[in-house]
Length: 323
Ligand code: ADP
Ligand code: MG
Image 1: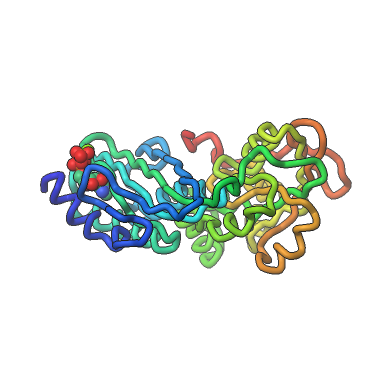
Image 2: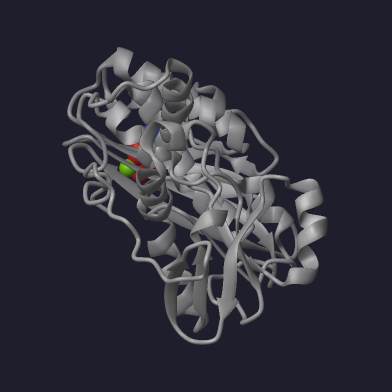
């Protein structure tokens, strides 16, 4: 199968490459053309996943397609951008039709969830590598930045934390005994995280700063604190953990997953207190986990207000992402 037949069969013909008002010209020419609404800025972000570094070589292609697009789309959510389109630069060791079909279906599935249209890409031979660029639009001056947090704001997250880290041993086949329903739920959160695109857009004009959790809550909060020139205090007891995780892993390990585990793709944001109740009325998953203070750095405190050292996770979850 030649390069052009591969593009036509698996990508130009995919459901995610369907016509859309946002894409005036899609796959087939030298560039795609996007139609940006008047007064909007283009948000763009790119992510590369390399086999053997970010995912195992023999990883299920359907799930890989889902996860690769979700991870990329989460950056649009973090900026408060509305999803428009994505491009796919695929480097493949060989053209395996079954692999390509499953990968394209995984992409389709996440593209539908995220309302993203495949607008172009590139296809080359080499070690398996997936590069996805996502494109979104946001009204001028309304994008959410990392740098706007102010002392007195609340520190919030958009949903449960630590699920992807808790799932990692299961994903790697090293799972200890775990109830089947919990294992399925955690693995779904790992392979098909749902970027919080609607929440991101709802935070425009409300949140003072935002980003998505890809490296882990502590690491990403440090980015936010540094960019904003503030200190963040996280109250460990308020971190929202998935039902069943504490029973399975115990309190310390669950806390380690929530604080240190990457790949949750939840939004973390800062919010003036007056905006909280209206936001929670529409987004019950939004949870206050701490405060923004004057100073620098990120501090974690226990229920008594004492500073605690973030526990280290027992699995080698957090060194292996390759980011
Ligand atoms: P060029 O040589 O001009 O860069 P290509 O031959 O690489 O163009 O690609 C032909 C068309 O197919 C372009 O519109 C490109 O965006 C699209 N394309 C190539 N690879 C992919 C892919 N993996 N997924 C989606 N579109 C692709
Ligand atoms: Mg090319």
